[in-house]
Length: 216
Image (cartoon, rainbow, N blue to C red; front, side, top):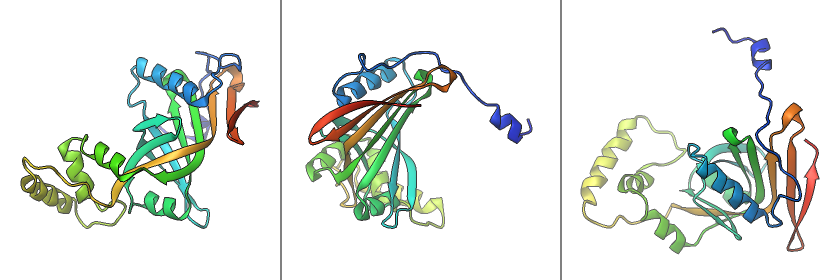
């Protein structure tokens, strides 16, 4: 099939599956997120914890990638990665982030903005040792975001460490651990017909969440 500008412009869906009203939205955005996240799990969506993480360097140049949500509560939203990766370097210099969840089958989107901090070493240790052995070794082996000449470099190191740590506890590398995004705003987007989508935004002002409807 030939791709044309006209064909791409004609790609569209009319969203009709649900609505989001102020009276139905929970007063607490974390509870509202829990409700929607539970619905995504109940719908058996593929990896409902997939989220886009957007960061920026110290000059403001943006960057984005997919990561996995590994926990959330009133304090914020957590994920794990290599501190020496591109994202880790950007976070160190500019500790602001935006997360985006998109659950296409439910016609829903959540945007979260906030400050980002490292999780405690204890929390990172606990999660690291809950991962499959292969993932633990992978975290040690991969110099994330750096140029490598051949995949064999990684595969050979994996084989070496698999033999070295067989039957032993694998130490968490110092360059790997968790971050938490502490939200200052959370927006819930529900697709509606004719592009008149529902958007309910929560902003943290003086320690309290204030809610407003935004135009689509």
